[in-house]
Length: 364
Ligand code: NAD
Ligand code: GLY
Image (cartoon, rainbow, N blue to C red; front, top):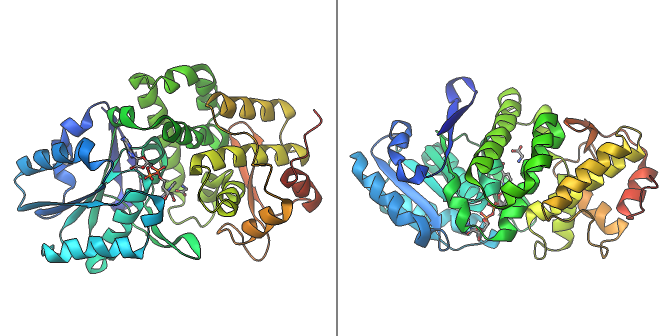
């Protein structure tokens, strides 16, 4: 088992990474507040892992170990489902020192975290992420939220977990497409802040795609290390943390125009990162060689490198203008000045953005 820390003074917490950690849940005992826990999972993950998790928690000498199984899907990430969590907590008389445990992907993690942020004005929670995306991104850093009909993740809070337990063995049951979508966020860390990790990914994509446990543990550790470093410097995204959104302004626009139906989040982010790299070349900030490396790595993970041809520039612009990353009326983008070097800007030639949105090819 490897342990990393998110350093946030009194809210610092460990991320435990390893194969088979769901069989060693005594490691979370010290992170459970009080004597009550509620494990929140969904109908897909529960049959695979919930019984074992509950059985182990029952050996920790707690007063009560409750569980709640929610419907599976992004469309249930809303205030109605949130209310089901509050109802379960109230019906089982959970007090202010209860601990919620999220067992699942980013949807379960975000909802459980937000429920913990709100219940009785804030209780503890623990993340047990079971998708690659959740192990490298959503379980770390304390962003919690539900969706509103008018916008994704628009109702939420920053609320850090007491610990994160990433068991790489859980990734074996993850559908292939979900696994590859998670790789987009892994590649993101190499692109924004870690050239050495990017090189490692170039050399190790096949073992990762084979879900080799050593390769996975290394990639998850490097990703979490990069994310923890950024979150430790800018917990509430006043500046630097926005670099974690490389490709997201383009990617969210793809998801919005498609009505969140066709592409997975990671797939949209993959194409969005290539678009950001391409615009960076047009602006003279990134070399064509680094652009080609970024595109090749994303492609080698089996991820899309161009947006759907059906999305027009005006559809892109309309969706991009309501993205959270828009400030003061202008579009703010995360761009690249090299592999491992991201920067944030709202100062760019809008005609060059049009070329990227129109899918014009780079002539390199
Ligand atoms: P998800 O939670 O919907 O999980 C994807 C699918 O895999 C689901 O059907 C789920 O039931 C299933 N699944 C999960 N673990 C499994 C396993 N081990 N075996 C088999 N099936 C399994 O999706 P996700 O990609 O994990 O997360 C996406 C969500 O994360 C979005 O709502 C997004 O907004 C959020 N997110 C949050 C942050 C953050 O910082 N908080 C960052 C990125 C994404
Ligand atoms: N996923 C982006 C962030 O945590 O800031």
